[in-house]
Length: 294
Image (cartoon, rainbow, N blue to C red; front, side, top):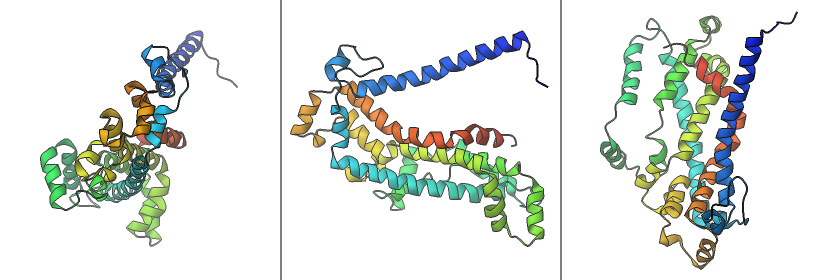
């Protein structure tokens, strides 16, 4: 038997869908505008002729970015950073969140350890002490300087430990009766049941490492060590003369600062746009389930 909807509910549903549709359009149109700018000529952009479709189609902005050996090196550095950094983030998040999800009767001192991690999220030593610690440990100029300082994302730990606490305790108890230890319970029961939360945290980690640029500038000793975002900030925002050539002069005749910035934004966002659809169905579910308990 179908549920009969009232006229007010139907009106609300229509208005709600219209609002969400307008919100989605408002989110998509700026990206389309940026994409159109990146494929348009400098004269068309300067004249204000570009809206949501390229005018005087040209690939000059992308040739300026992709046509450099330095770009490929920076891209590879970012791939290494994301691969190593995301692996460390997920591994340490799981290993920390699991014991912190236990009750004080199972893990004496659990509250003290939890507040220790929360304290580091609320208070930091500042930029200069952070840099000095990394320098004194000999990490400057290596890929480890980009991944070790952010190896334990405390916000992700809090989300995951709350998710773990929401799982039925009977599952762990029955596994222990069968002789399973803590590690087997973690990897055979908790992790497979936590895929929505883990997919959400995976997305957070990938986006965080891929979009980070400031640490690459101050923790690298040579431009060859820059990740992609730091490299793009150098050659496009600053337009570093060290990267200019005769071919660049021809390209700059077809592009300007706005088209270059548009190409930079789209190149930086494209990998995330590819990854997000595969993780989107886990995203909201993981956030909600991981924030029920404290």
